[in-house]
Structure formats: structure tokens, C-alpha cells
Length: 200
Image (tube, rainbow, N blue to C red):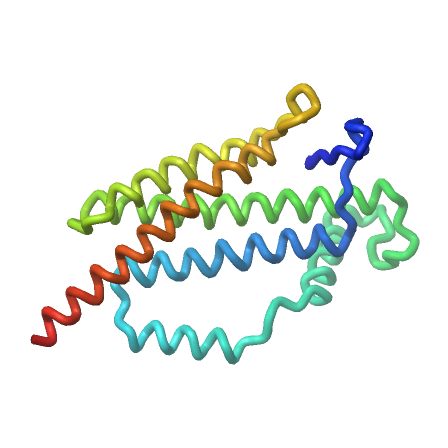
């Protein structure tokens, strides 16, 4: 659960609405999915042609269809809990909607954690076996990212009304992102230098 403070500094509950929840879940899955694909392409040194084919395939595919996904989740919930009238969403009680939102949030968290941990493991193993000059940055990002994800998993309310686990998690992403992009820049220079040497 995310906490929000009003101007009077009193907890006012969750300020998310249905649209912001969906955008939050969709953007997290999209970002982690894309970065996992990039990790696989770089770690396994997939050739440029395969990367272009994957890019062309992704461009041809349609983006995530919320209505189809909602329909599948509703059907799954109906199959599991047939006693509730899940097919007529407009008649859902507040409790039924909360059950569905908790279910979606739980699934989203599991998928995001799986993709995030998989790419952290890929990068950490690759950093251990490669002779890349910036591999220490990967180690810091992998270990720091794994530890930071604990703040997202084990959420706690605002300490003394100021800072909660989610805010700390966002705070840790600032130095980790800076270090990550420093590695990306160094990796680009390293690969360019390697390709120029091979061409000569």
C-alpha cells in the first residue's frame, strides 16, 4: 500500500485511481520487460541482425490491450469464485472490486519481481565472467537493486509521518540509475573501440 500526506501532514489514504493504477502496473511491466530483453541481447552478445529482427517484430505487434486482459482476469476470477457476479462489473460491490485490484496488484508485483531479479542475476553473472572494464558498476547496480527491491516488497508506513519504504525505494533509484547509465556509456565506448579494432 502506498501512503500519501495532505498539506495538514495527516495520512489520507491511497490517492491512486483506477487509471493511475493501470498505468503504474503497465509501465512497470513494460520497462522491466524491455530492460530484460536488452539484458539478454547484451549478455548473450546476440548479433545485430537478430536484434533488428526482434525490433521489427516488436514494431509490428500491437500494444497491450487492456480490455482483453481485463476480460481474461474477470473470466479467471469468475471461474475461481463463481459465487460472485464477475461478469457484470457495474454491479460489483466495493469489496469485489478490491479483491480484483488486490489480485491484479499481486500478479503484477510477482511478474515485475521475477523479471527484475532475472535481469539482475544475468548482469551479475555476466559481470563475474567478463573482463569488461566497467563490470564493478554492474556489481554495485545488481546488489544495490536487489537490496532496494526489498523496500518495495516489505513496505512500511511513513516513519514519524515523513518517509516510507516506497519513498526510500525511489531515493535509492537515483544513484543506481546514475551508475547504470555510466555503465551503459562506458559499455558503448568499449564496444565501439572493440569493433574498430576488429575492422582494422
